[in-house]
Length: 341
Image (cartoon, rainbow, N blue to C red; front, side, top):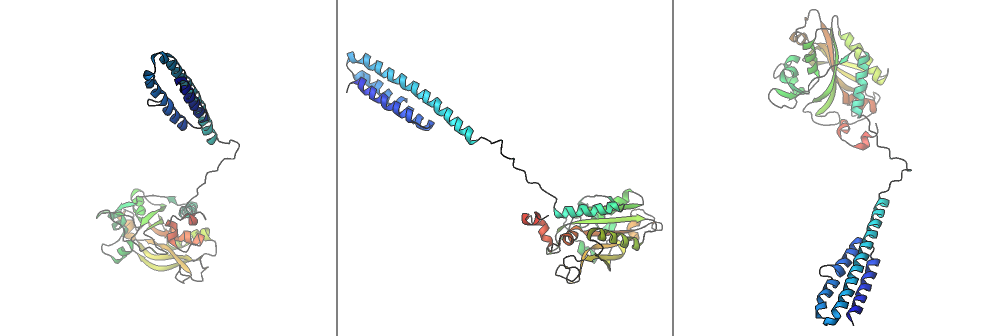
């Protein structure tokens, strides 16, 4: 076969392959095969020297013509495939602007915070103001200023987490009472909502981390009857007139006399269940007249001023509000539970 015929055959095969290529990778393989450094045409250039001298010019012309033609065809096909790939990409990424938008999921308050906000709103309506304090407290504000004798058995119920010997996580928001009274003269009428910590064994009604709302009123002629009336108004505002408030004698170092606060258990309607220990009531906190030692410690005249204080657990109120029988659900992070509120 003459050289020119061989080149015509190679050129025809190459053109058919280039035109049939459907993607850039296949096209690149053909370019390397025919036009690459070790490609077929480059090998043919090396063979021209083996031809008779009179045949070399025609062979060179045929080879150059085939090389130029294939280079031009290759560039044209590469451009066409690039445009095609770009169009396919645009089509794949196209957005139909006529479709309705995807509405984002709207979050809502955690049931604990929603209950806390409702409780705060009621007390604001009764003339109280919100006071806040640090969660990381010192020993003085946590115990000494609240009339806790060192090594007193009452300290066991307030066992908390210590950062150092004198720095700890507050076990109750009563610490805010001391900080507030130290900064202002009576009358004082505050509520102190916030997070507290105790080394409690976690069960259906206890947790090591919980929310508390503390209340304090100090003024002239304040009696236990004022405390009782305030808490009854609060309970009826939360749960209706059928909710009964029960006071039972208790002991707290910073109040005297002291009383445990319990509300009618809404989970059983007062009939008795495992959450209320079959009593029909659920304990929600403690209360009492502020001990004169606490008032004297912040410089108040105990002959002129008296006061009452109370502290309630927000989780207990949320359980009563929503009929929840296990406090651990609030901190589980289970969306099946939280999405119900």
